[in-house]
Image (cartoon, rainbow, N blue to C red; front, side):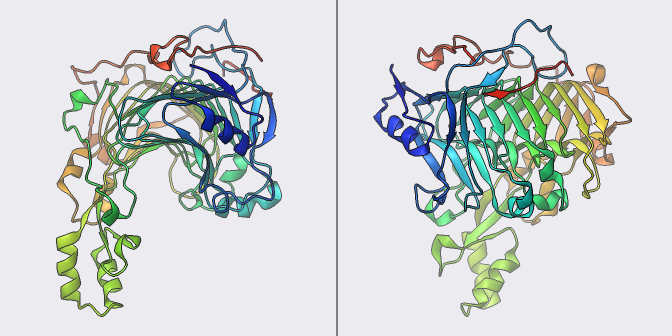
Length: 479
């Protein structure tokens, strides 16, 4: 396994180094603050597409070596303060308001098999921010850092993410699974101003979508779904569709810190969330609906969940309502599946002081999927409740696929070490009482912590060991 050094942190130099790499090699981005894109380039249109750098599933990428913290006592609630980056040396910066509605720094892409591994570490990803462009920021500027699609296993660790309205990491595809650890995500308070939270679309820090559906159903098979109805095969397990997030700090106003759909299972543990929106910091979608492509336009036009939208459109092609409904019933397919499950423990969620008009400040927002909670502390600022549940399938089309029925929210909560402060209540709605057991299942045991990939010498890192050394100054505190 070799290390190949990129000439700089400019996207094209990084891509050149990746193109020279073989499976198991590591591309090293040197120390420095680099414009990742030039100001005369248009991200997502005249270069490579929405992904600036394309990486095969088994190539690793790292920045210059970093120094790490040590000597802190263990904590019960929140991230482990040890082995955190003190300062980053490799900083990739978006220097201006790039002309794009969305974009990705790095896209790792595999071949739908699970026998690949990649790791990315010791890099700071820094988006653009200008206070004078606040309205433009909210409406247009949506760049994220890392996209892992059908890659097999991955580890993303000791990275910094700032001003990335599109989020930090998106994991997509039935074979994508892994761990995100010792990362720091910072989205400053300015993104919280202006519109109502549910209209601002400021993205998610971490997004889990194991069943990839490209929204063009005639061009692929969206029913390629792995859905295990047995909770014992999901909870406390590390599956081919699981994402573990641990030892991380999330600071500031993303729409949700975590969001999942399409059969997702994630474990959020030993991490700290602060200064957030309060609009479900931990979120699990429950959407499920049918889609049907227009037979005139092919896969390019998709109508979701509402039959009348399809009927109305087909009328523009001269179809009768009866003919359109017959076609709909014969050709509609499942377009979206809800979350399979999520686990939350040993976390600290605090300080939601933002004024927003959505009507509630919830630490967790369970719209789909079974879920498990224990040893968490929630409160501070405007938090009014820990758990808010709502079966999202019930507010969409009533004609939904039966597989979704297994994703109706159900919570197991061990109250023994749940700490609620500042008048934060446990439940936000009566539905929580009807869908909650205040103890953990007898069969449940948490998956080993730290995750086997979250170590200095994990055998699946293909011989690459984490290194230490000494950009961005990040204050480490016990708060």
